[in-house]
Amino acid sequence: MQFRTTDNDLNGLDLLRFLLSITILIYHFPHFIFPFSDLQTLNKGTLPLSASLLFIYEYGDIAVRVFWMISGVIFFHFYMEKIATRSVSFKKFAFNRLSRLYPLHLLTLISVALLQYAYFQKFNVAFINPGNDFIHFILNLLMINYWSSKFGLSFNGPFWSVSVEIFVYIIFFLLAYVKLIIKPKFTLTFTLIFFVIYFLGILNPFNECLLFFFAGCLLAQNYQRVKFSHTSFLLLLITVLLTITYYTSIFSHEYVSRLINCVIRLGIGILLIIFFSKSFTMAGATLRTFLRTFGNMTYAMYMIHYSLQIILILIFYQKGIEFINTPEFMINYILITAILGYLIYRFFESPSQNFLRRLARDL
Image (cartoon, rainbow, N blue to C red; front, top):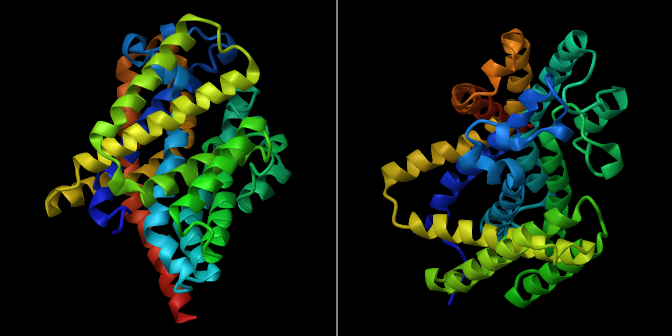
């Protein structure tokens, strides 16, 4: 009996990816405050709709970790057996990834470089990320801009998570190729190994991505075993840990804090994936198309929002923080990003990907 994900199990993940993208847009909204005040001293309670969104302002970076876990689910579902049976070579695997990621990465890298120059001319400081020199530009071109935490964030800052994930793709291919994650017990072993590596702080900055990605692989491999009822204990555990963490300093020790935070993040990722995937398993063709549209927009939304933030600051800075730091401005910023995300996917990202893959077939 197969316990793995089916195609229908992935329907809801498109909607989850879209909502995670919105979460990141909200989490990065404080970037708009940077020209007016220091982000380090910012009181996030003064941000728009903070009464409802304070958790996202504080912990919205968990969305990136859940994205990594979703990638593990999707990659295991689509690639595991094909790689293990040699029907997908490393060359094809790598080209599929590059044709999907690189065109928009290159576009946003160039756009942010130009906009960073304009921003520096106006404010005499770089927008959020200071490492915008020639060396960092080359590192970004090679997509290895965050393969060492010493490199720091540069240019289109959010791409750091994709850069790290590219390294994890290579590890996934190698383990799938030699069939070391073909059985659940092997996948569990590697997930536990990556958990220990993360806990000890080894292989930084890849360790956290490795853990969440392969936790996603493990979840995909055992998906049919997991029921809604099984998540009750996990939900209770997360609630207890969050409550204790919030009201006490019992987890203030570095390694204990790292362990608890990791368990909370893994638990939230599993809960979200299970909830959204099982909620839309029976989706009809029209709803699946609708959900896929939301999913297709997410990479563009994630990649363009830095550029859009700089543009909006340059346009509206003179109106002051009273104009920018408002719910109306934030909602419009999110709507504009979503609309641009759809248009860029529809008229640039997808055509570029198709063009490159057709070109490769013709060569």
